[in-house]
Image 1: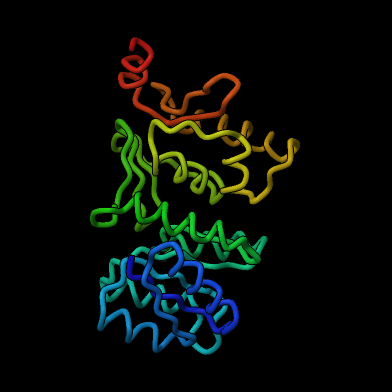
Image 2 (image 1 turned 90 degrees about the vertical axis):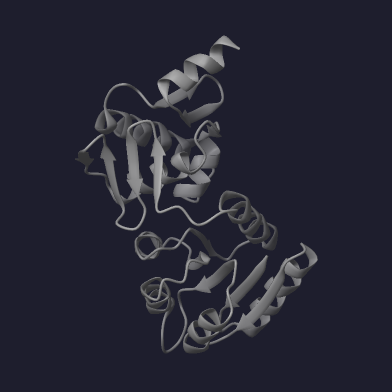
Length: 229
Protein backbone atom coordinates (compact mmCIF):
# COMPACT_ATOMS: atom_id res chain seq x y z
CA UNK A 1 0.00 0.00 0.00
CA UNK A 2 0.98 3.62 -0.59
CA UNK A 3 1.24 5.00 2.99
CA UNK A 4 1.66 8.58 4.19
CA UNK A 5 3.35 8.80 7.61
CA UNK A 6 2.77 12.14 9.38
CA UNK A 7 4.70 12.70 12.63
CA UNK A 8 7.16 15.36 13.77
CA UNK A 9 9.36 12.76 15.50
CA UNK A 10 12.07 12.25 12.86
CA UNK A 11 13.58 9.18 14.47
CA UNK A 12 10.20 7.48 14.94
CA UNK A 13 9.11 8.12 11.36
CA UNK A 14 12.33 6.58 10.08
CA UNK A 15 11.64 3.42 12.08
CA UNK A 16 8.02 3.34 10.86
CA UNK A 17 9.06 3.81 7.24
CA UNK A 18 11.67 1.06 7.57
CA UNK A 19 9.17 -1.38 9.08
CA UNK A 20 6.52 -0.59 6.46
CA UNK A 21 9.01 -0.94 3.60
CA UNK A 22 10.14 -4.30 4.95
CA UNK A 23 6.48 -5.38 5.05
CA UNK A 24 6.09 -4.52 1.37
CA UNK A 25 4.48 -1.08 1.63
CA UNK A 26 5.48 2.21 -0.01
CA UNK A 27 5.79 4.87 2.74
CA UNK A 28 6.19 8.63 2.36
CA UNK A 29 7.30 10.66 5.42
CA UNK A 30 6.04 14.15 6.24
CA UNK A 31 6.61 16.03 9.51
CA UNK A 32 4.12 18.87 9.09
CA UNK A 33 0.32 18.96 9.02
CA UNK A 34 0.00 21.53 6.25
CA UNK A 35 2.39 19.61 4.01
CA UNK A 36 0.44 16.43 4.76
CA UNK A 37 -2.77 18.03 3.50
CA UNK A 38 -1.02 19.17 0.33
CA UNK A 39 0.47 15.72 -0.27
CA UNK A 40 -2.86 13.96 0.30
CA UNK A 41 -4.55 16.30 -2.17
CA UNK A 42 -1.95 15.71 -4.88
CA UNK A 43 -1.41 11.97 -4.57
CA UNK A 44 -3.92 9.32 -3.48
CA UNK A 45 -2.68 7.35 -0.48
CA UNK A 46 -4.17 4.03 0.55
CA UNK A 47 -3.55 4.82 4.20
CA UNK A 48 -2.37 7.73 6.35
CA UNK A 49 -0.60 7.15 9.68
CA UNK A 50 -1.35 10.41 11.50
CA UNK A 51 0.05 11.61 14.82
CA UNK A 52 -2.45 13.77 16.70
CA UNK A 53 0.24 15.70 18.59
CA UNK A 54 1.61 17.66 15.66
CA UNK A 55 2.89 21.21 16.27
CA UNK A 56 1.06 24.09 14.57
CA UNK A 57 -1.83 22.35 12.83
CA UNK A 58 -2.55 19.35 15.03
CA UNK A 59 -3.71 15.97 13.84
CA UNK A 60 -7.36 16.68 14.65
CA UNK A 61 -7.42 19.65 12.27
CA UNK A 62 -5.56 17.69 9.60
CA UNK A 63 -8.10 14.87 9.89
CA UNK A 64 -11.03 17.29 9.87
CA UNK A 65 -9.77 18.96 6.68
CA UNK A 66 -8.98 15.65 5.00
CA UNK A 67 -12.55 14.47 5.45
CA UNK A 68 -14.06 17.86 4.52
CA UNK A 69 -12.05 17.67 1.29
CA UNK A 70 -13.46 14.15 0.72
CA UNK A 71 -10.09 12.43 1.01
CA UNK A 72 -11.10 8.79 1.48
CA UNK A 73 -7.71 7.37 2.50
CA UNK A 74 -7.89 5.12 5.54
CA UNK A 75 -6.47 6.90 8.61
CA UNK A 76 -4.67 5.28 11.54
CA UNK A 77 -4.23 7.90 14.28
CA UNK A 78 -1.41 7.79 16.83
CA UNK A 79 -2.49 8.95 20.28
CA UNK A 80 -0.96 9.34 23.72
CA UNK A 81 -1.56 6.30 25.91
CA UNK A 82 -4.57 6.67 28.15
CA UNK A 83 -6.08 9.64 26.28
CA UNK A 84 -9.51 8.10 25.71
CA UNK A 85 -11.07 11.39 24.59
CA UNK A 86 -8.42 11.82 21.88
CA UNK A 87 -9.29 8.41 20.49
CA UNK A 88 -13.03 9.10 20.60
CA UNK A 89 -12.59 12.49 18.91
CA UNK A 90 -10.35 10.97 16.25
CA UNK A 91 -12.94 8.30 15.43
CA UNK A 92 -15.70 10.91 15.34
CA UNK A 93 -13.69 12.98 12.86
CA UNK A 94 -13.34 10.02 10.52
CA UNK A 95 -10.32 7.99 11.64
CA UNK A 96 -10.53 4.27 10.92
CA UNK A 97 -8.40 3.00 13.79
CA UNK A 98 -6.06 4.23 16.52
CA UNK A 99 -2.80 3.12 18.11
CA UNK A 100 -1.52 4.44 21.43
CA UNK A 101 2.08 5.51 21.95
CA UNK A 102 4.44 3.97 22.81
CA UNK A 103 3.72 0.99 20.57
CA UNK A 104 5.54 -2.05 19.24
CA UNK A 105 6.44 -1.64 15.58
CA UNK A 106 5.07 -5.10 14.89
CA UNK A 107 1.67 -3.94 16.12
CA UNK A 108 1.68 -0.89 13.85
CA UNK A 109 2.51 -3.06 10.85
CA UNK A 110 -0.26 -5.48 11.87
CA UNK A 111 -2.78 -2.63 12.15
CA UNK A 112 -1.77 -1.34 8.71
CA UNK A 113 -2.15 -4.84 7.27
CA UNK A 114 -5.56 -5.27 8.94
CA UNK A 115 -6.80 -1.96 7.57
CA UNK A 116 -5.66 -3.03 4.12
CA UNK A 117 -7.67 -6.25 4.37
CA UNK A 118 -10.66 -4.57 5.93
CA UNK A 119 -10.97 -1.85 3.33
CA UNK A 120 -9.90 -3.43 0.08
CA UNK A 121 -12.77 -1.52 -1.52
CA UNK A 122 -14.09 1.98 -0.78
CA UNK A 123 -14.18 2.79 2.96
CA UNK A 124 -17.50 1.94 4.56
CA UNK A 125 -19.64 4.77 5.86
CA UNK A 126 -22.01 2.44 7.70
CA UNK A 127 -21.58 -0.91 9.40
CA UNK A 128 -24.52 -3.31 9.35
CA UNK A 129 -25.39 -6.54 11.12
CA UNK A 130 -28.99 -7.56 10.61
CA UNK A 131 -31.11 -4.50 11.37
CA UNK A 132 -28.36 -2.90 13.48
CA UNK A 133 -26.63 0.05 11.78
CA UNK A 134 -23.55 1.98 12.87
CA UNK A 135 -23.18 5.36 11.14
CA UNK A 136 -19.40 5.85 11.29
CA UNK A 137 -19.46 9.44 10.08
CA UNK A 138 -21.76 10.60 12.87
CA UNK A 139 -20.95 7.92 15.45
CA UNK A 140 -24.62 6.99 15.74
CA UNK A 141 -26.16 3.54 16.17
CA UNK A 142 -29.68 2.50 15.08
CA UNK A 143 -31.69 -0.68 15.54
CA UNK A 144 -34.16 -0.62 12.66
CA UNK A 145 -35.15 3.07 12.68
CA UNK A 146 -34.69 3.67 16.41
CA UNK A 147 -31.52 5.40 17.58
CA UNK A 148 -29.60 3.79 20.44
CA UNK A 149 -27.71 6.06 22.84
CA UNK A 150 -24.28 4.60 23.63
CA UNK A 151 -21.34 5.84 25.66
CA UNK A 152 -17.94 6.39 23.97
CA UNK A 153 -16.63 3.08 25.36
CA UNK A 154 -19.73 1.22 24.22
CA UNK A 155 -19.37 2.75 20.75
CA UNK A 156 -15.73 1.67 20.55
CA UNK A 157 -16.54 -1.88 21.67
CA UNK A 158 -19.45 -2.21 19.24
CA UNK A 159 -17.35 -0.78 16.43
CA UNK A 160 -14.68 -3.46 16.94
CA UNK A 161 -17.28 -6.23 16.88
CA UNK A 162 -19.18 -4.88 13.86
CA UNK A 163 -16.03 -4.39 11.79
CA UNK A 164 -15.74 -8.18 11.55
CA UNK A 165 -19.14 -9.84 12.09
CA UNK A 166 -18.86 -13.54 12.74
CA UNK A 167 -15.34 -13.31 14.11
CA UNK A 168 -14.96 -14.45 17.72
CA UNK A 169 -12.99 -11.97 19.85
CA UNK A 170 -11.48 -13.12 23.13
CA UNK A 171 -12.06 -10.98 26.22
CA UNK A 172 -8.37 -10.16 26.35
CA UNK A 173 -8.36 -9.06 22.70
CA UNK A 174 -11.34 -6.78 23.23
CA UNK A 175 -9.79 -5.38 26.38
CA UNK A 176 -6.56 -4.59 24.52
CA UNK A 177 -8.43 -2.86 21.69
CA UNK A 178 -10.84 -0.80 23.78
CA UNK A 179 -9.14 -0.36 27.14
CA UNK A 180 -5.50 -1.14 26.22
CA UNK A 181 -5.19 -3.59 29.09
CA UNK A 182 -4.84 -7.36 29.12
CA UNK A 183 -5.00 -8.27 32.81
CA UNK A 184 -7.55 -10.81 34.06
CA UNK A 185 -9.17 -8.19 36.28
CA UNK A 186 -9.55 -5.77 33.39
CA UNK A 187 -11.22 -8.37 31.17
CA UNK A 188 -14.18 -8.36 33.56
CA UNK A 189 -14.92 -4.90 32.17
CA UNK A 190 -15.64 -6.54 28.84
CA UNK A 191 -18.35 -8.73 30.39
CA UNK A 192 -19.95 -5.66 31.98
CA UNK A 193 -19.94 -3.63 28.76
CA UNK A 194 -21.14 -6.57 26.65
CA UNK A 195 -24.07 -6.86 29.02
CA UNK A 196 -24.84 -3.14 28.63
CA UNK A 197 -24.69 -3.37 24.84
CA UNK A 198 -27.01 -6.37 24.75
CA UNK A 199 -29.53 -4.59 26.95
CA UNK A 200 -29.48 -1.40 24.86
CA UNK A 201 -29.53 -3.18 21.49
CA UNK A 202 -32.42 -5.40 22.56
CA UNK A 203 -33.90 -8.53 20.98
CA UNK A 204 -33.33 -10.54 18.94
CA UNK A 205 -29.86 -10.95 20.40
CA UNK A 206 -26.99 -10.11 18.03
CA UNK A 207 -24.00 -10.25 20.39
CA UNK A 208 -23.35 -13.87 21.29
CA UNK A 209 -21.13 -15.55 23.85
CA UNK A 210 -18.91 -18.35 22.56
CA UNK A 211 -18.28 -20.43 25.65
CA UNK A 212 -14.69 -20.48 26.91
CA UNK A 213 -13.62 -18.26 24.00
CA UNK A 214 -15.24 -14.81 23.89
CA UNK A 215 -17.85 -12.85 21.95
CA UNK A 216 -19.06 -12.38 18.40
CA UNK A 217 -21.73 -10.31 16.70
CA UNK A 218 -23.84 -12.13 14.13
CA UNK A 219 -27.33 -12.27 12.75
CA UNK A 220 -29.47 -14.89 14.54
CA UNK A 221 -30.22 -16.74 11.28
CA UNK A 222 -26.56 -16.80 10.29
CA UNK A 223 -25.59 -18.09 13.72
CA UNK A 224 -28.22 -20.85 13.60
CA UNK A 225 -27.08 -21.92 10.12
CA UNK A 226 -23.45 -22.02 11.27
CA UNK A 227 -24.36 -24.26 14.20
CA UNK A 228 -26.20 -26.70 11.91
CA UNK A 229 -23.12 -27.28 9.70
